[in-house]
Amino acid sequence: MVRTPLTPEERERGERLGRLLRDARGERSMVEIAAAAGLSAETLRKIETGRAPTPAFFTVAALAGVLDLSMDELLTRCAPLSV
Image (spheres, rainbow, N blue to C red):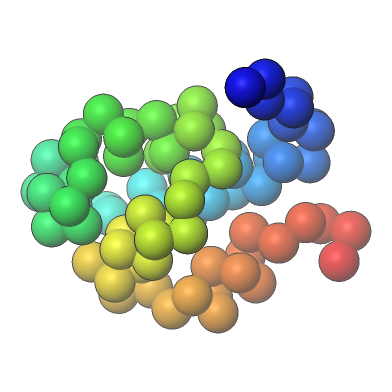
């Protein structure tokens, strides 16, 4: 299966999500947050750095729960800039 290349907007949205999650994590370790969300630290690292700009919904939901972020806030802060 060939993946369609991401648009610049999709990449930017992934970077915004990564910054938001990184900021919400604060001083807590990446390993601690990833484990609490049921993810590997490498997966969280990829999301935070924008190398995985389109994580699965349930991955984002798990991180939001651990970081005490609402899905509404994530949607609002990571939505395309043109909306």
